Amino acid sequence: MSRITLHRARTVLPVASPPIADGAVAVQDGRIIAVGTHDAVSADLGDAVVERHEWDGTLAPGLVNAHTHLQYTDMAEVGRGSYPSFETWALAFEKGYRVEHDWAASAAEGVRQSIESGTTAVAEIVTDPEAGHAVHDAGLHGVVFWEVFGWKRSAWQQEGPQRVLAQLEALPSPPVTGLSPHAIYSLDTDVFRELQRLAEQHGLRLHIHAAESASEDEFARFGTGPLAERWRGLGHSDMQLLAGGGSGHGVVPYLDTVGVLTPHSHLAHGIYVDADDRALLRARGVSVALCPRSNEVIGLDAPPIAAYLRERNPIGVGTDSLSSSPSLRVLDDVAELHRLAIAQGYTDADLHARLLHAATAGGARALGLADGPTPTGALTIGSRADIAVFDTASVAPDDALAEVVESAPAALTTIVDGRALWTAPAVNGAAA
Ligand SMILES: [Zn+2]
Image (cartoon, rainbow, N blue to C red; front, side, top):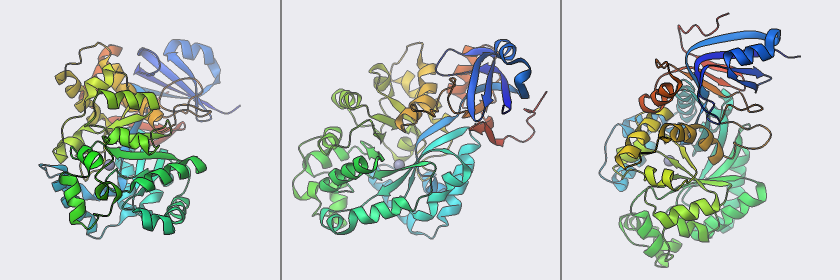
């Protein structure tokens, strides 16, 4: 029989069940085999446990970063700015992007920062192939999405599918790979339809930026507005939405007409959505990765977190990249979502639990990793042993949950498939 490792912590937050004081999780062959109070788990397993770790903090599922571009980690200079609009940020981004970069090193640094803040899975968007190895090399879980950007119908028909599939093929797996049709304004309508067909044919997940800029709606509906003017200025007046005077639909219903709203896709941002949009997303089973700190840097409005929570949309939490965010720490965005939810009038007692759920099980669901034979995102028997321990001071379990959500505590260790990818220096977690 293979060895059993037991992790004991002052508080255990399984996410799938209530917080546990003096809890423990037992791991064997990379899977969780027991969760409960330390006394109960210990008594059940007895002498079978061969390795014990005692953590002075809160043990939770590893965080799932449901939207990021780790490739852009060395574009933090752009992210340190503040911008009056999406269009001005986009100009700064393009300027920063064109400078020479070592994308492989930049992505590897992003992976390091992610792991050291308790992240065990990522929705990583790759734009340049050199950045495509970092998640695989580190052994992180998640989905690596090849970004599909700037295709018009005529060019796509000539060589689009072959090129995109070849680029996808070149990404190492694991993890799972998918496609990221960038946004409604950077791809033709027919290209979106084709990408959905490819995704279905090849069993690929899709991840799309949507309702991030306020002017996307006008672009989709009428082919007008600041974003439309910018694309016309760049010589793209022949794009289908621009040439045809728009689709007559807002962003979310437009995406539905091209077929990409399915349980196999998830959106990033989802700021400029109304109740009908949110209802459509629920009906289609589409999760939204909320990235509030990135939205703030870019000068956008805050995502309607209170409405998403009240209406019970599936949500995850993303940091986006350092080109628009101060850090790759998912808990920093969780703390921001907490502040926003309160400011937007969400007063239910489940707020802490719902937000931790979004950053773990919700993210896993968004990425299609919450079900199947090897689920992640919650501490349940049979799940992957993807675990993070956070440096909390609270004694009562509910206080520890509040501390994790509101105060973004540092990680003490990050464990993937039962293996510690990282442990904070000077932490004595290897006791007994
Ligand atoms: Zn993004």
